[in-house]
Amino acid sequence: MLETLKEYNQHRGNSGYAPIKIGIGINTGSLMLGTVGGKNRMDSTVISDAVNLASRLEGLTKEYSVPLLISHHTFWNLSDANKYCIRLIDRVQVKGKSEWITVNEVFDADPPEVREGKLATLTIFMEAWVLYNQNKFAEASKVFQECLRRNPGDQVVQVYLDRCQRSLRIAKLKANLDL
Image 1 (tube, rainbow, N blue to C red):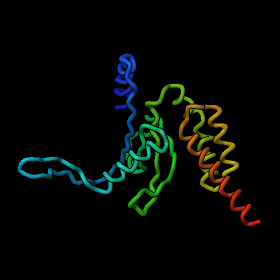
Image 2: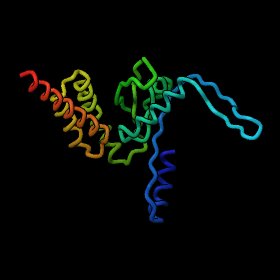
Image 3: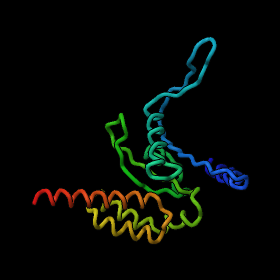
Image 4: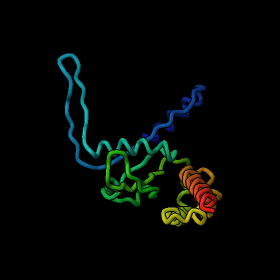
């Protein structure tokens, strides 16, 4: 879908129209498929926790400015995850769920320079992510800045850098209030 959208957006650009952006959330699990409605209007739908989680992941694509996110359920069910450019980007508790979900970005469809930059900074991104999750925001910020220096197009790094800076400001405010 993302590759086809790229081609379509080239056509839109050539015609003077703005590109279209989409966000895709994929989760793996059981669901119920059925037809609902009445005599004059019928519609098919799917319902389940798995579908709800996929919808929540789709919503998170906006927060991270990425086109494709998958859950750990989907990641574990891939026959060969090495075929794809994937990185873990967060653990979240989505609305309506008590369990934490691991969120992975699939970035195969990114522009080549951004994709290569993400692959080249994968190790230091994970180092920064671990520091962030240990509440070591100053250290994480430095490593995220290095990621961003190497790959300025990495929107996820910018999200984390902003989060680190916000957390450091809050900590400083709290420290000033304690004086």
